[in-house]
Length: 145
Image (cartoon, rainbow, N blue to C red; front, side, top):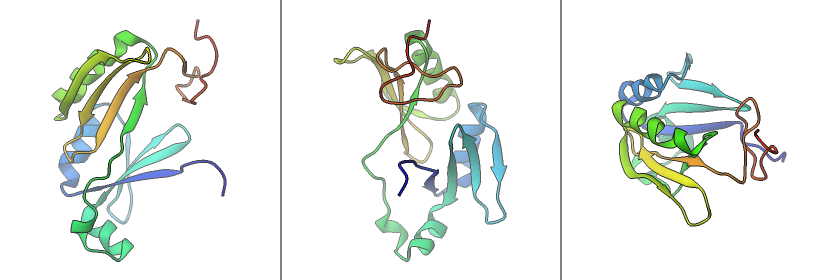
């Protein structure tokens, strides 16, 4: 298996409400014939899929899916970019779980849940600068200056 994730699929109960959240952030959506909403990202895609359909695909009851203990992280280029993005997510219907704050390892983070409860970490990491096209990797892409 090659080391990558191609598609992150979020099971959602209210497709219109959840898609409206991501649309309000300025993301460009693709609709699929099977009712999935997909947002293409650099190197992968984020998909919204009916929770019932996802459960049927997996062959398990929908109540077994719940919400896993994970976050989807969105890294920004500058510390000052965290708070405005959190406010944009709040305005789009997200629930701010933890306001922007400095963290012990030297970064600056906040946590926001989308309308279905999927948790996003909005993060500035001074030790992992983004590439010019916004790509992230753990060791960074060198000096951003």
